[in-house]
Image (cartoon, rainbow over all chains, first blue to last red; front, top):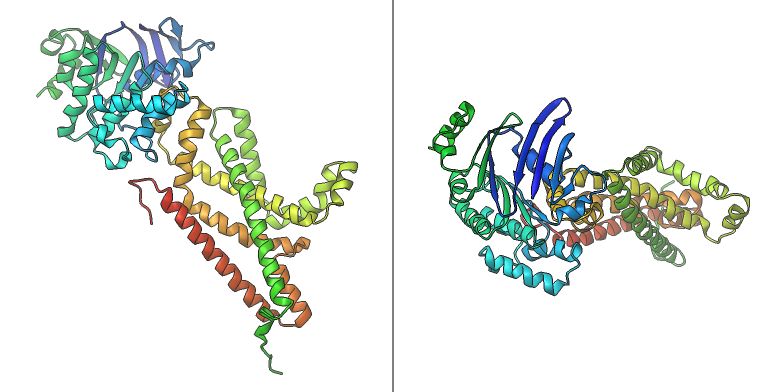
Length: 241
Length: 236
């Protein structure tokens, strides 16, 4: 379970997160949407400790991220993250990209790590690309490798930061399909995205952020058809064409 | 009176042998100093971007100290004042070492060039996007593992072209070691001049040998570059 309690964060004088409260239960999928600059990606990075916050508390499975005793490296092993621009290691093959962390962090043997990597590549549909370099893959394929790289650590949570925003339209679905499967298998996911089709299909909760605040929450069709907040209405009217 | 060219000083014995001996010393100084420069430069360059303030301060001080003082001055300092820094007894002992000037040249050139390698490393790190670092950390790796397994190998590939220049420069700078009496290539060409008064030929010979050495280094580095080229990036 991830609990976010009264979290505020500043970049210098600028407050990016304002008193955020949210709880994500095990097995849930939460979608975060909102205009750019609203603090979505920053909130995501606070959850796995890539960005510090100045006020409040984020607790993952009972461990507070702001507690100096918490080992962030250890905590991150169970929180996978997928980035907008994939962020694969360009100087390593797909297989090395996936096996690196399991071998160095989990101390798995090369054989064991590669076996798991091949299973994951099979799962995301590109086992034939194992020995290619990232540059030789399409965007959609790269993002699926990035998902496989995260899953190789056998995380309990997955964070997605606009995973389809850098993709050509025809590649979006191949990535979303993988994510839908993950959600249905019970992975706990927090997804920053504007893919409302995905949100409708798998989200247990949708939150809408604007200027560092959560201004609307919804858990069903009502969020899309009848949002209460004017800002949400405007935003949704622009992306749901 | 016209100057009588005598190019045979380049191969006549013992002069031809002197040039070869000089070349061998130049190669040894260059390679050994490069090993120091590369390993120390990678460490210092990496410390400059770590989250620990003390280490950042230390590595910045190192870089600025060594790259802002002329190499000739540094060489004189290490050779004449260096042993004194070690205290009376140890300094006296060090001064007795046979070929001390040769070791001092390697040491001085190594730690001077390390400051330049460190700056290239910093440029390499800066050219890697912030999210690449975050991606590595998000897989649970520690800062040390992140640099050791992903970021440093990546940065080194990016900065291979300027590293080639540094590697070349280290051979050229090794000629300054003659000022403390190291019998490297330039020293030997002067020695031939002193013995035969054919300095023009000897210096020209040394120039060509340096040029060949440099071109060989360029070939070797070109091979390394093509082998470690990051797919999808512009290469030669």
